[in-house]
Length: 109
Image (tube, rainbow, N blue to C red; front, top):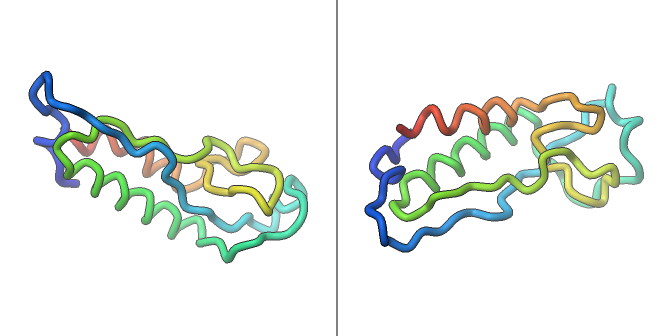
C-alpha cells in the first residue's frame, strides 16, 4: 500500500477521516438463520468485500491529511434490509474483510 508519507503529516496541518465507508457482503447460507428478511440490494461476495475495503484504505492512505478510516459497522445488522457491511457476520464469525482491515495499519508505516 502506498501512503507512508500520508501517515505523518506535519503538526498543525488540518486532518480528515473517512467516517462511514462500507461494502455489503452476501450472507453465507450456513449463517442465514441469524438474519431476518430479504436483501434490498445485490451484495458483494465476502472476498470482493475484502478487496474493496483493502483498496479503499489504500486510497485513503495516499491522501496526506487523512488520519482515520472507519468501516461502517463492526458486525452486520440482523435485518437483511439493513447493512451487512460489518467485519463480522452475525454470531461472531469474522469475514475476510476483518483480516484486510486489521492488516491496514501494518502496511502504512
